[in-house]
Figure 1 (cartoon, rainbow, N blue to C red):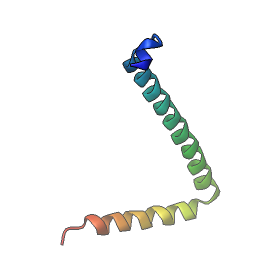
Figure 2 (figure 1 turned 90 degrees about the vertical axis):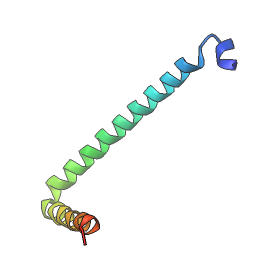
Figure 3 (figure 1 turned 30 degrees about the horizontal axis):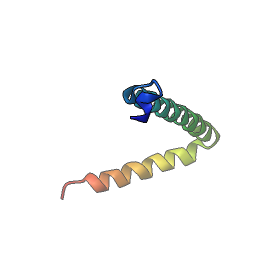
Figure 4 (figure 1 turned 180 degrees about the vertical axis):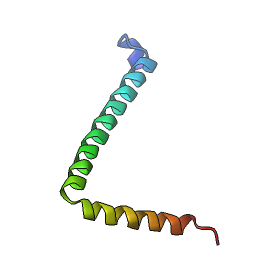
Length: 65
């Protein structure tokens, strides 16, 4: 109710907050992507071992018995 009194409907405020959150998340994902790519370029063997280990673990978790 206070938002409507200030001249801005609550839905507009929520939309702005959600948009800001999405933009922050997008920026963080882009930053992490850059760090990951730099790590892979710096240490490709470590990245390969990590990918194989992750694939193995995921396979074990989802394997049918």
